[in-house]
Every structure is written in structure tokens, then in C-alpha cells.
Picture 1: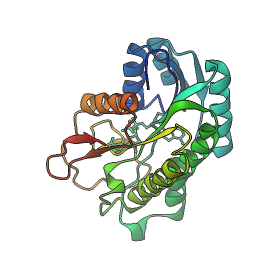
Picture 2 (picture 1 turned 45 degrees about the vertical axis):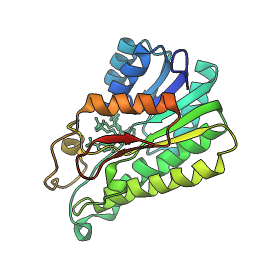
Picture 3 (picture 1 turned 120 degrees about the vertical axis):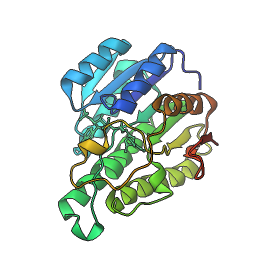
Picture 4 (picture 1 turned 180 degrees about the vertical axis):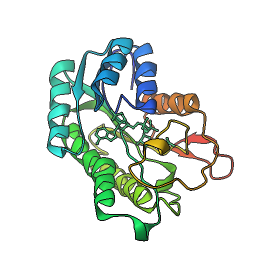
Length: 233
Ligand SMILES: NC(=O)c1ccc[n+]([C@@H]2O[C@H](COP(=O)([O-])OP(=O)(O)OC[C@H]3O[C@@H](n4cnc5c(N)ncnc54)[C@H](OP(=O)(O)O)[C@@H]3O)[C@@H](O)[C@H]2O)c1
């Protein structure tokens, strides 16, 4: 995919990773539609990146997710990529995790992604990309993060399945599974204290790999289990 001039919707552009991706894509000439819950942060990322349009979106409302995809298509005049970078964490032993917490994680991290994908797949141009940030925990679930790991693994499995479904349509499905990064996501967890986490991976390295993966039509960004080095495949 050629990023220069590409029409790209970024969901969760108010987040640390989503914001960095928005800047990286804008600097390469992409035309952006941005979403976030925090209206002030959404406005400032939009100003800084010269975004075409913004949508205030709480992805708990999965119907609104589809509406936003269609709104972005209208405002951008089509859609070449969607980058889904929103997400929510929670910590604590599985036995102590309330049903409400599990429901919120599964809705935000999984069901909302499905709603966005459902709306986007029929709209993406030939050669377009559905890119979703899941997590290394989809492959390596961690104690104390059972519900979060499950929500990311479910999303990753969903992406693998739809990649097979759309393989003849020219649309790429790109599953980004980064290791831990110091974005503050951990401090914004809806419940619990995090287990001991490794040193955060360099955020610029993740952004650079994500953008390269979009450009080169990669299927996955994964972290090497030994050194944490990122690989595109
Ligand atoms: N940080 C890590 O260690 C790490 C590792 C692997 C994968 N990831 C994944 O990377 C992605 C980006 O996370 P980050 O580290 O950049 O964290 P972040 O800075 O906390 O960003 C999270 C984003 O998700 C949005 N969000 C959360 N709940 C939402 C809801 N109900 N409706 C709409 N938006 C909602 C936030 O929106 P507002 O700010 O506008 O509320 C924000 O844009 C997430 O999918 C995360 O799971 C993170």
C-alpha cells in the first residue's frame, strides 16, 4: 500500500500508540480520519496531523463503530486502510475478576473490533488494509491478565479467520502483536495491579514496524520470544 495520499481511518488516535501512528502516517502524506473518546485530545491530534475529519467514539457502542466507518468513507471519499489502535487493560487473578470487567474488556478489545471489521471489509479499496493492534499476550497469555489475554487472543483468531475469507478480494489483514510498551495503558487499567512487566519496548520501533507492515502488505507484527525484537511476516 502506498501511504502517500492513502485514506486511512485510525480508531483510538487519542491513545499514545494511536497518536504516534497518526503522526507517522500524516508525515508520509496519508489523509486521516481519527477517532477517540477524549474530545480535547482528539482535537489536538487532528490539528497536529491535519486530519480530514474526526469522530468522537466510545467503542462500547458497537453500532456506532459501524456508523463511524461509514462516516469516514464519506468524508475521505473512500477507504484504503483502517488502523485499530484502541484498547483497554485490566489486571487481577481470574477468580477475582468481576463479570462486568470481563464484559467491558471483551466488548472494547474484541466485539468492537469485530464491528469495525464488519463495516470496513466491504468498503476497503483493492489492496486496502485492515490493521488491528492486538498484543503479544495473544500468543503468550500471562497470569494476572487472563481476561485481557483472552480478549486479545480472540481478536487475533478472528483476524486469522477473516484473512482467509478475504484472500481473493485484495484486502490485507495485518495483526500487530507488540510486546509491553511504556504508554501508560497499565496505569489506565480498569481494575487491579499489574504483574511484574518487562521493560517497555521502544515505541518508535513499534510505530516504524507498523507503518512498514502497512506499506509492505504484511500479515503480522510479532515479537521474538527471546530478545523481544520485532519481526514482520
Ligand atoms: N502499552 C502496551 O504495553 C501494549 C502492549 C501490547 C498491545 N497494546 C495495545 O496497543 C493498543 C494501544 O494502547 P496504548 O498502549 O497506546 O494505550 P493508551 O494510550 O491507553 O490508548 C488506549 C486507547 O484506547 C482508547 N479507548 C479505551 N477504551 C475505549 C472505549 N471504550 N471507546 C473508545 N476508545 C477507547 C483510548 O481512548 P481515550 O484516550 O480517548 O479514552 C485510547 O485512544 C491497545 O489495543 C493495547 O491493548 C498495548
